[in-house]
Image 1 (tube, rainbow, N blue to C red):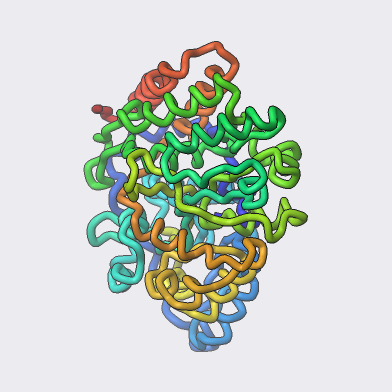
Image 2 (image 1 turned 90 degrees about the vertical axis):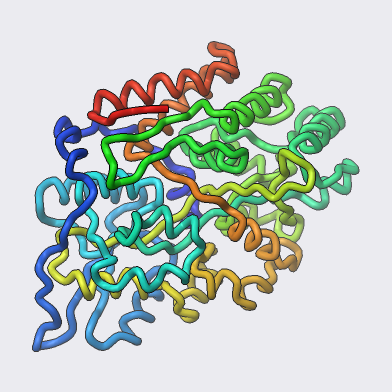
Length: 449
């Protein structure tokens, strides 16, 4: 996810208090209908208001408007991440003021859908796009034949590393997490001021930690929108505990740093050689090249280390979509916009790939020659997508919760306590499980494990 990606993918803000009316909404959460479709105006094309913050998005809008006669996009930058979501939730609650189409990160979809704020685009032909997208992203955007969002970009994870530092310290590019620890020991012994990487311990890296748990097999939520308020919550499953046992050991032994992401010290660490690797997502190349410009040409990309030698388990950090709100008066045209602003448009995606470092979830673009074989000067001319594309294609299904912000903030708080020595790392997942299930139950969810 991006905008150099950081403002969007590394940001988490304090969770807003859930409306007291949520419990009542839960019982009727799965279906909604759009406003009346007034069709095209006899005096001109239908104008569809879009809220989005993708980098260089104006060029994408211009491309759409140039190639569509009966529908035109009016783009508004209504804020980044939570700023936009707060405005959207306020407008939906007020019954007016929401855009026709809105950019939403995948983890936000269940919360907005829960309040009946999203149009079922399946009624307007969106199901025809199912085969155009990687299955895990489509599953996060739909519920059976109900389509609540069209995937745009994602964040398959990989390991970016400083090739010069690996050569200097005779480090081996790790293929397993066991090897990763071995190389962390070797580097820190050779230079006590250097670390193999930085552990994302703060709010902005909650999605990073979740992505690593995803790779480890953790599936914290099980539910169907049609069966809410029933939901399974298992934030302390084996995969989640494996990740925190591992990283907790590295932190306790001072083999990795714990500087907060999205800070000057973190940026400097990427620039100065304090960190020899950056475990990031498919949008990470754009972010890294913007905050560590003077290291251009020194980085390379390798697959995410595996828990089992020879494995190919993957995780995702970030991802976004276009959804149509139930306040639209033009559901047919709004659905067309959501489907086609990026969709399979090579022209739009060339802008997104070359200028915004978006990572496409559209199969024809993702697996196309242009994207897979594109060379990146910042990475020494490496075709880095030869690493990221297989990762994206190997990601398995994952569900987000309708209370994701609370879960992320709780996890961040417990991780912080463990880093300070106030809580044992082995208790972090159990503490998060206890607090999140309690919160969800109070909001009217029927929680099971």
